[in-house]
Image (cartoon, rainbow, N blue to C red; front, side):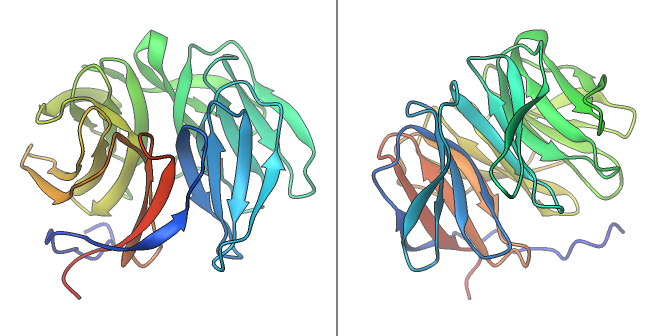
Length: 256
């Protein structure tokens, strides 16, 4: 067992709108203060919205920001879809290039060993960057334009592929597609429990839960191209970034 409590796959309930008026939102993260960080692709910014609804800019002048990943030390990593690189932004706001030479990078997350996982679309791989920015391949095989990935506590992976489906891979990184019950899976992917993930259907209106064996079911609906997804540490709530409405919604997971 990998230490993740099971979550009932009952439909999620929309709780409230966290922030509206975004600019083609993609990646999201929640910082220690509870602020929602959002990558605004068309505006080239990262914004932060407090629990009370106040929004400020964290970074500007970015070129097609897509994925976000917030490290434990407060450094924020931002994938530049249009610039083929990843930025690192310090808690003080200093911006520097962390890694270059990528291929339309999309979703970001962290591996168990602290390396940054990068969904590298054009090479059909999930790359891993160490603290110095050195890249290695973490996942490859049956991937079709990957846009998001997560690693489970047992070392296995799940990957969303915008031109394919949802794939799982063992710790060796060799992937296989288990579900194609999506119009176009988006970058938003999050661990649901020890054997499944939540994935947004960017080409549709839904968020779905996918098991390792491929079982797929809808947990939330009614969006206009959901693209980003972040789940709270206690897995009680989720935030969905909706590309079509430029809005981020909070939802309650399960029936409670």
